[in-house]
Each structure stands twice: as structure tokens, then as C-alpha cells.
Image (cartoon, rainbow, N blue to C red; front, side):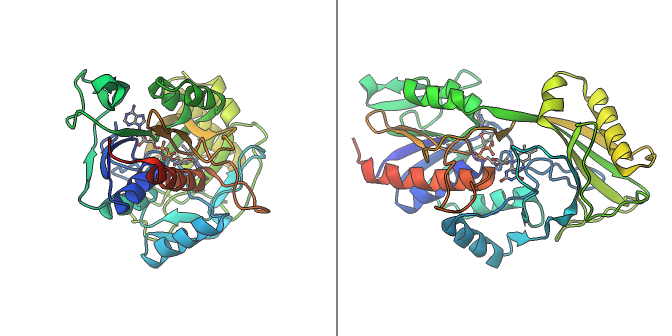
Length: 349
Ligand SMILES: Cc1cc2nc3c(=O)[nH]c(=O)nc-3n(C[C@H](O)[C@H](O)[C@H](O)COP(=O)(O)OP(=O)(O)OC[C@H]3O[C@@H](n4cnc5c(N)ncnc54)[C@H](O)[C@@H]3O)c2cc1C
């Protein structure tokens, strides 16, 4: 059994960690954020919580469907209808809103996965890894952290990178093949606005789908109506607005106030009504939201270096005859497949 460092505690990192730990390996899991989940994200606020990253997910493969059924049995996720998305334009590179979602919030799924990790896993949050460096003449690895120190368990026998492709390309520098693979898996950015109103919005049919002729909004989704969501006094409704990739690229460095104003204007146009001033409106920029062209391989793994990568940039192919898996399913499939591969090839040095 070996000591492995996993960088990134999104769905992929949590999955590879859980699988490797179950096989008896000791895992040190690092994430730069305060908590786990990555893009399976929820933002708390005085007006209630917003799922401002992935709104949900689908399950296209038999393996992931079985996993989702277990999560559903545990009450961690719920299979809803697709009708809770009000507005969406016809962006061909993204699938329809995904019907499975976390209960009581999207990041609750990641928290549940974290809570199930065995004692042989050590989680370090607020720990940004800036480089993976060889030690002991290449016999092991050490991780350089953003405060310029090194991770406390100084020597790892294997390292897994489970972060978005563009960030993975930087960390995977010791293996040119994986760097090259990640350079080709480009992600689309997404400006997101979380807004809440004191009064119900007039004329809103929650199950209607509209196209946004201005090409600003990809999706407008009412966030308080799902199972497990709380209701704050004085707040009639909360919405998450996702901009299209194209609009986001054109406004990537726009000030948050401009983004909020533009997305609210597009939302009002879509509803065909004037909007009251919101009680709350905050913008978040996802620089790497969804992968445009994931790799067909399930993961990256250099057996001699003992350096691997997994996440939504990998595993573009699902079961034969089924549609391609979306981001969260790819992250899970990729993390699981890499753990199996590593276990077959790892032995203590
Ligand atoms: C707006 C939006 C809408 C989406 N819609 C859908 C959808 O409808 N369906 C769907 O299936 N998917 C959707 N996705 C995509 C989905 O969220 C991702 O594909 C999936 O969550 C990726 O998981 P991951 O573990 O590969 O990466 P991530 O969730 O990005 O996890 C990576 C983790 O690595 C950490 N990290 C990064 N760099 C470092 C570093 N240097 N050191 C330490 N830690 C680091 C990050 O903090 C993060 O926690 C959407 C995403 C967004 C943002």
C-alpha cells in the first residue's frame, strides 16, 4: 500500500480518494478552497443558498446510474423534473438541464462523500498546490504550496491531479504527455448571477422554456423550489442566471456590477416584464465552467512517474449506444477508473 497525494477535492478528487482508500492506500487530499465540492458548489447568503455551479447532473452509464441510486437511497440526491429551468438558449455544446440534484444543496453531495472518507484519508483545505517536485532522486514526490512551504507529509509515492484542465496542465509539468492532453481540453467560462426578490416575479411559468434572442442567457433557474431548500422570511424567490459561453468570453473582465445589470436586463427581456430591484444580486465568474472537448481516454496515468490525472476533462465516452456523459458523471467515472488502474500498478517502493 502506498502514500498518495490527491490535488483537488471536487467529485473526481473525492471519488479517486475514496476508491484508493477503500483499497488500503493512505491518501492526503489537498484543496485550495475552504471546503470540498469544486464546481458542485453552493453559495450561502442572507437571502438563502444558491447552487451557482452545476445545477444538477444526469446519469447515462450503468455504473453511474447504480451509484446515483445508492446516493438517492441515502437521501443525498433527488431526481427532479427538467422543468425547473425557466430559460435556456440553444447552445449546442451543452445538454439540457440535468435532472438529478443534491439535497439540500448541490455541494451537500460532496460533503456527504467527504464524511464517508475513512480515517486513512487526511484532508487539507485552504491548501493550494503550485508545483509537484521529485525528491529522493525521483523515488517520490513533494508538493509545493502557495505559501512557498511544502506539504507536511513531505514524500508521496504517487500524485493525482484532479483539477480543471487548464490548471492541471500547469501542475502536470513532469509529464509532457498529460500536459499536452490537458492543453487540448479547453473549458468554457460562465458568468453567473445569483439574485433574489421580495415579491414573486409576475408572469413566470416555471416550466416554460424560452430562447434568449439576445444570446446573453444560457439558463435562468429558480433556486428555492427544489427539495430540501430553505425559505427565508421576506424572500419570495431566488434565481441563478448563467450567461452563455460566448457572452462570458466577450465580457470576461467586465466589472461584476456590469455583469449583474446585463444579465438582469436579459432576464427581464426574456420574461417580457420589468423587474423590481432585487433584494440581493451577486456575480460569480467561473473561469473554467464546462469542458468543451473532453478527452476520449478515461484518465491520464504515467506508471513509471506514478503521476496521474482525472476529472471532467477525461472520459468523454460512456457506455456503447448511450449519450456522452456530462461533466459530473465524467468526473466520477474518471476518478473511479484511475483508482482501479493505480491499484493494479502501484506497489511500495
Ligand atoms: C455554471 C456551471 C454549470 C454546470 N452545469 C453542469 C451540468 O448541468 N451537468 C453536469 O454534469 N456538470 C455541469 N457542470 C460541470 C461540473 O460542475 C463539473 O464537470 C464537475 O463538477 C467537475 O468536477 P471535478 O472534480 O473534475 O473538478 P472541480 O469540481 O473543478 O474540482 C476541482 C477542485 O480542485 C481544486 N483546485 C484547483 N486547483 C487547485 C490547486 N492548485 N491546489 C489545490 N486545489 C486546487 C478546486 O478548488 C476544486 O475544488 C457545470 C459547471 C458550472 C460551473
